[in-house]
Image 1 (cartoon, rainbow, N blue to C red):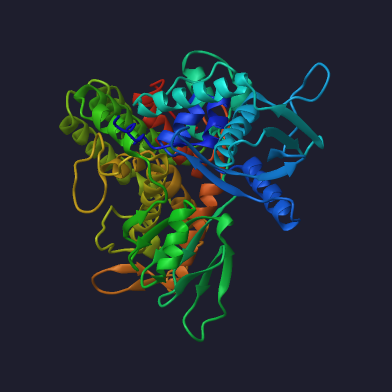
Image 2: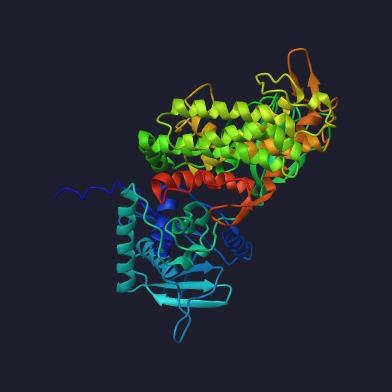
Length: 548
């Protein structure tokens, strides 16, 4: 008799059954697309388990079973009067029940799977399940009976079916679950419901409490010590500083900065983006943490290979950019009759270009419309500067690579920062920066990053720069390095530009379509996720935000 063939299909994480019982879409995003977000509740749960371990109350046991198709780590297994008791600790409260406290279905399924693993590991010994709910200080007990065995088997079969699918399950109809889900900012269930005409509360977090760590001093080294990033300046320029990794969203190295392999590995493992700029401010590229983006990228490729999809997105993108430029000119000249008169022709021409975007038959036509709009916009930009601005900071046309005046030196640096922001968001969402819908591949810059950043040039670079120049923020001598061929930001100037940009990112703004407020930093990520919605969910929300 031939032996039974081995099961070559990868086993299911036992903890994943908890997500499956809670929401199939959550299971798919975490286990198939490998999208995981650690919110405050998850960090609180980790702290609880760490505390239990320090108090000697937790004895972890790694288990796996080819027959069951499961693997996982049990919180604790103890012997009580000849019975093996499987313990699972939960931070929250127990489920309501008529007489005695009950276990939530997802907790029951997870612990039942652990119990089956323990039973296989220690055959012939009775097994009991227990869940400790620390918020209510109650322990719920239940047996490993036939019903629970069947629930686990059905869940494993369903998990395998979902894992083999390339389609995301639909948004759950149980809206209460979305409010407490850590992946709501990724799934965006309420945004999908809003497209369908339903009025629902916002779920997208207003801001990320973590900070971007900029390292701009040449010769600085970035290393790792335990759960911290250690920044060591050159000898004689200060003492090393330590940044808790959990408080860093990205590490940005400007110029000759060394990052150790240990620090890089830590950043990748903890989804901390690492990005590199030249000392002159040109964005070189970045590195994002995490894997498992295959399904998302395949959907991206399939969608953007369709000319109707790409052209439709490009039309909306160019229209949004032109309208952003138009609204900035109107906003900056509000209440100034003389400025309005000078800007009248530029405003008129930009307005005339907008309806043409929706009818453009090709990208080449859109490029022409975008170029015509840029000429009118940059031609009008000098009139937004105050009369008392130092002539050396006045804008007199766009130039770059290298910049030949102070205004363009700062503007180019800020555009590089916007590019990094967009690139990081694209990597975080799991899309491919190299496959866009409007820009064509050129140099090392990914077309999709160039596409999306068009939405943010005005609000994140042009507007704060013009305002800072009018406030006389810049020192024309100390903040710049000037030669006969180019103008760069000095060390002091880079620090000032970084502070200007990071402060602008933290400012909040109310989305004109979705109706809720969020920071510009979160708006960038939201736009990338709404772009993915164009081919994975409810289309129609990408590139719809407008300046007031």
